[in-house]
Picture 1 (tube, rainbow, N blue to C red):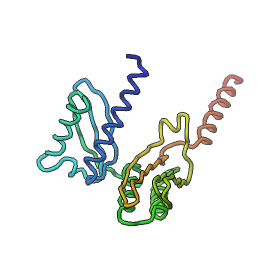
Picture 2 (picture 1 turned 180 degrees about the vertical axis):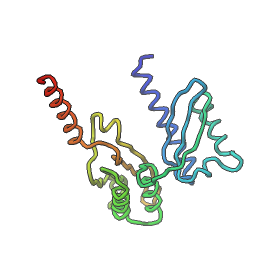
Picture 3 (picture 1 turned 90 degrees about the vertical axis):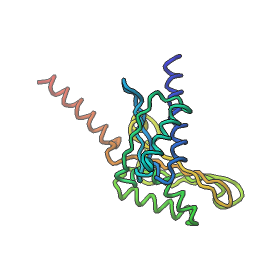
Length: 210
């Protein structure tokens, strides 16, 4: 198998695992998952706002998750740990789920989108984009986008720093999809990178001249 196909298969499997965990751990407010490979097994770290609901009584739920990961998704010797989400406003999975829950309670999508953007930016994010799709104002489905700050769409900044989370909610008018994209506080801005590169170049030239 080529390395490209292997990478694609790994990403597809992770997306499938995320989908399973998001549905299984909705009460725990799922905040994402990281998967890494070690010599003794596959380390699966689950982030959630309510870790106790991931573990379950006497560890029942986390054992169930380990079995599903191994048998259904083919994860070899899964070592599952749970980490509490420290800043919910900077976690796109949590914020997408909060938007879905608010819409389920009857809050208008625009109102909850602006509320979420304010909370995310107040938490220090450099940028945020929220997309809500479905039958928003008519019988025809469409997507509305809400943005603030800076969100890179491509290149190293997008690949290395941008984080995304999705959720969905079933309302009387149909299913609505929510996607939250966050550019976190520790991510560099393009001008900072350009200034740094220019400074290194100028310093190098000065050193050669000396």
